[in-house]
Length: 601
Ligand SMILES: Nc1ncnc2c1ncn2[C@@H]1O[C@H](COP(=O)(O)OP(=O)(O)OP(=O)(O)O)[C@@H](O)[C@H]1O
Ligand SMILES: [Mg+2]
Image 1 (cartoon, rainbow, N blue to C red):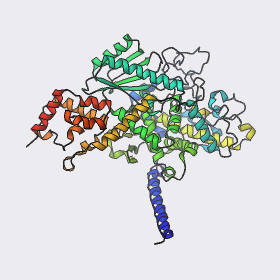
Image 2: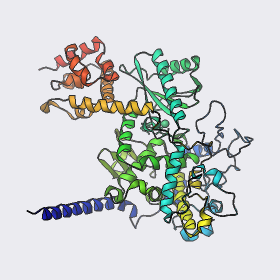
Image 3: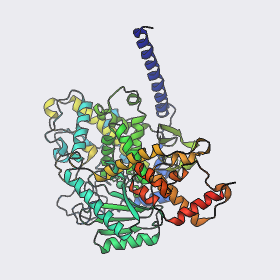
Image 4: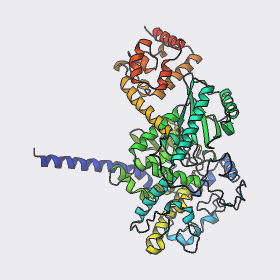
């Protein structure tokens, strides 16, 4: 057969594949374009439970944050305190605050009367809108004070001569990301804080390991983001109230922490504090490895999904500026934001068919993100699944474990625990949805206005300014991530590599392998296995039927290695964690072999 006909065969195959996958994706998106879909969000407020009403009430009593105050840098970029003289520091948000009086375009105290304002934007409103744009929002009305001070990222970065507004927006997004990305000094400060805490905590508890997860370990942090740390040990015995209080006293005594708070009664008990040198907020949890696993997954997503970091940081800043990112107040946490953006990008028909380049189309993608989650997403019908190789939408009704008390609750299935809804705490979906819809309209309106403006009027304008609402300290505009290593990111990646190497050495004989065995082959999961084993040891005697009966390398699989095997395994698995696992005490080993022996017929 000629190479020509081969070529045409391949290209028709490729076309048919493209068509099939586009159709599949179109179907996925059809969920949101159901013509008969009835907008039920108008009545969302009425569905609030008493708890939610109470928390809403509380939200209006949030103390204003003062980012300059010693010991509090949690949200240096909060917009709540708009008063540069500092006169209003630490006052409660009251009816005059910009968040409650609707001066921000997301009115947190949304009422029917507010909904009917905004006539000037009527033609852009759709009939379902609960949101109407405030007159003050337009970026380009010359009667208003310049927004230049609030948009430092456009300084010396003028894109006003771009013909396509979407290109301008893409460039502005990139400028903002460079502006908000960490400087060398910020990375060093975070590294130092982690090192200092790790060294001190392992002095107190020599048998523990201190890991970093969350946004610092994934490079998805804003200047004010906290650092999430977890203490893990082979024995798994640090998840007690006693440990919580022991560590919090130690941190205070050693002057490692300020503003220490012990949250003992939560589902995940933690200690919260500010690290004394850096003032960075730290959350320490105990004996939970799922955050480390999640960080590993997110790093992989970032590597394979261009545009993810940019959009996540924009959405994070957007929600943080409106105080809609705090899960304790029903907001959307960092992990949920990542999953929303990731699933959006993976399921975007034009991205998954390689029809457009995400980095060249960040502007359009941002608008589409706001459109999807602000207007079209069927929160009541659709759950999001971000499993490896299976990013998809699920029919919510088939997953009762993901349903919350409210049918409009956002549902994101946790890839490492399918029964966990990552966004279960985010009960304030009505305001989040309004905010996204507001951002959509604001961006569309601003682009429309700028499109019709003269080039002279465009100079010095920003498309993103009112969406971003950045009011933090002036930054140096330097993304210096390539000048200094983020040690948490590096440790995480090294850990990944070790897992890949370890995977190739781990096997169980075919006829004896079980599903459980095959998933649990990472260092972290070995640790979990071992912990589970220890817990079992404490709780019950093994019945014969429950005793593991694995293939010849099951000991390696379980992280339990006899001394003669050690040299071989040590070469492949030089991880500190695994060394620790390998050096578990002889009683555990004996117990394990005993059980193994008992299982023999
Ligand atoms: N509801 C949840 N279910 C399971 N794991 C969660 C949940 N919320 C948080 N986590 C874990 O905690 C980590 C940190 O969560 P967090 O919400 O602080 O996000 P983050 O990426 O660190 O964002 P930020 O920069 O705002 O702190 C997540 O990466 C995830 O591993
Ligand atoms: Mg965090």
